[in-house]
Image 1 (cartoon, each protein chain N blue to C red):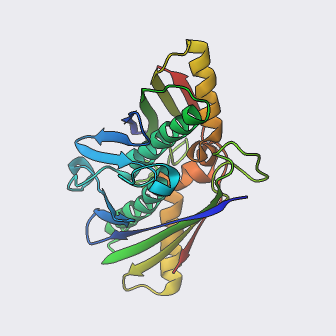
Image 2 (tube, rainbow over the protein chains, first blue to last red):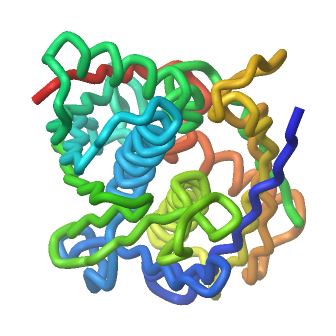
Length: 144
Length: 144
């Protein structure tokens, strides 16, 4: 077992802008002007998708290194739909979050389509972000 | 029902660096040098936590506006532990992702602790990212 702790801090000011300094890397989150923000950065959902796509890319690079596959690059598209009435506090029939998420991948590697699909399923199975979305994850919120 | 589609694209090159252009906002994901990367940006898990903290902050701002609460600011800490043996392909006893996630919040607002806790639980219940983590979310992966 190689337990690792992950911790980040984000700060909300007087608007929708949220800032984070992650080991020296600045991340800014905001809403577009249509959502009442100033479009200073991606939305939380866009960042969730970037995290998921990034996890697929990262684990792909790792497995390619482990299996000595020449993976020259990947393009990863992440898509999903949400009923925004829920977060606005209006009654909804479906769930509060995304109903589902689809990841579509282009792989630049000398593999057949069958091999690419098998590779992607192994990647997905070893991606922590996929696991935390696919399977229920306890999330606790408390006053500091 | 106000259905909204969210789509993002990320690109992996020949290293662990993954880049995304989200409506003009550049996001770079990488591993630290200890993980074989060049530390050009946060890791996917750090970005997942930024997304979750950002969602809590965003929905807090929204509910504060709707309820005319003077929310001057928030500091949000997101923490979790992972057994990294899993993503490396080694056998593990627990799950591939984080076992759980804890969100700790400092709120700058003229509310009692009880009112702050009630506020945070309403925020968490309306936060799509919390919902997608707390409850199983179908994630499909396919070749483009």
